[in-house]
Image (spheres, rainbow, N blue to C red):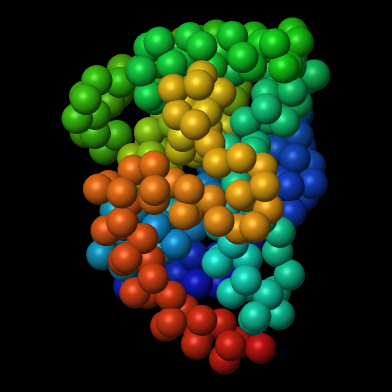
Length: 248
């Protein structure tokens, strides 16, 4: 499924979580790095105006649908894709890394949250080797020269899989840059996924997610930050729905 943005296009090229796990396993086994992005409406909003974000998305090897509107519009266009939230990928990918004996790095959020997330992951993925926990300072810019030590640290750690919890567009931009600077590392952009594991942020209950109302839960939890964001998402929705219908 292909979405048009103000800067170009974005294509969901991995339809289900099972497809994704198989492709990641193949890349890890072959010693190949990758960048994984999880597309949602907020990303489409940012892609309309941020050329750097579009460039970062163009460098992603794997793109899944993270958000029910993305899934619904894809199906409207007769492209059957499944919902694959980034937060739901952390534990399965950590378990895969443990099974394959691939070292893992955690990057983003805070030092305390990373430590708690690492402990939670080790409990759910026995044998997992977390070789790096990197919490960049406030104002961290993945495109700036000052980000180079982060890539040096990743390479030195021997990590083969790196979970990025920087939020969009920073995490996708870092992953895109990492494709050349850390070619053996698989970068997985998972937003608040590590904070959910650490307990520093509360995710919507399962029943809320089953009703496709996680966005309401999040908006009520942080209205000042998320009401403007979701208003922008709603504003672009009609145009994307029309384009999806025309693709049928």
